Image (cartoon, rainbow over all chains, first blue to last red; front, side, top):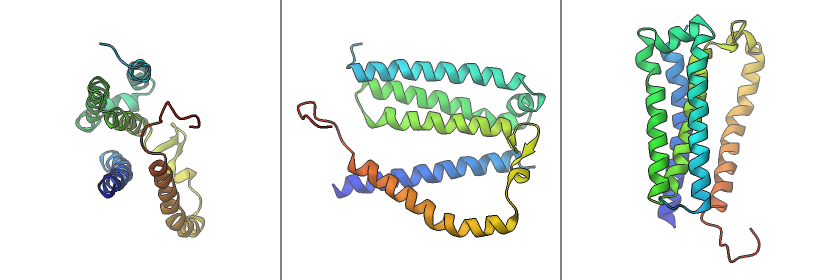
Length: 32
Length: 150
């Protein structure tokens, strides 16, 4: 169960980070 | 290939989603020269080409997950498809929030209001992410069809 919780937390944090990075990538690649 | 009803629905909905994404992706670049340049112009094409490639990757992962009954894969792949869909909108629209008339900075509130708001956002956004994660954790796992209340 602890292992599953760890996976879940990592996936959640990774998802939030991924969305933030997608935004940053668009800003950096197309930045005015 | 015989699939359980939910997997069959997922497959159909997945194909529909991909088809709709394809139609809109082929449509939007022709609406504005700026969009066309973003998607097909050099050097932005190097960056924007990643989006359709990752969409196909997610779709392959979705199908593969459904076929092998690896249930978390289609879920993650579907999340990926929507993140990429929004990234696609971002690539076309950036830096506009109302295309061709209002940029993000023009639409934003004055600095002072934003500075005031960030204090609240720094506390509230992690709380929202936290309780949403908690709700997902509480409702994890499969529904037992034998059990009455879901």
